[in-house]
Length: 256
Image (cartoon, rainbow, N blue to C red; front, side, top):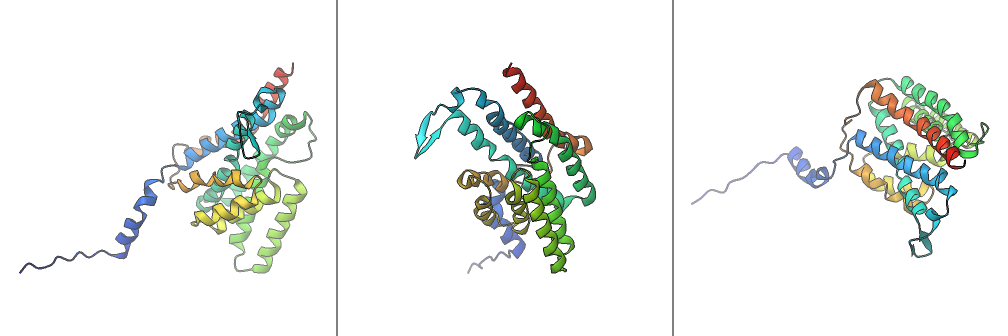
């Protein structure tokens, strides 16, 4: 009689086997996501600040329901990818950084540096009433700090978050209180991508256009990637004010 062979598989192996289909699609590093976010933001801002100088980008190629799909629409659709990725990477950076104060300070300094090109590219003035998105990310980072530092002091935590929420409204920073809330949501629902997508996309403008941006986030593999070191980090920060200034100068040239 042949004896049956039994194989012992512990819980760890079962967990790994169940996650093989998921791991197969996790192919995007943090650096790849950064490049995607920067590229989509550049495309979005070309659509926002350069295309209005011409009529051709607004001519529809076809219509979906009641929506005309033009080159302008496609550029702005691609641009929806930027903020969710930046917010996601902010949360990842917060969880892995060893110096939260420096992280906040870096964002705040580049937010200040970005104000002049932000104002110029929007209204050819130094007094544009709203602030750039780096202020929203800075407030979000402070919100994450409040969530974690005072997790056992609910009163102080609630008051801090409420103050930051009000500040995001008063400052009129890009994406405003919705962007601030979105960052907190990504942290609270980390590890639950479906809930992040459903609830997160309902917070941001153009809800159904935002939902698709969670696809690359679900493909994040947890690695830092090819952007390494201090210079790589600061070049990433500097891209934001630099590309705004370049677009402003390009628009001035095109307008003659």
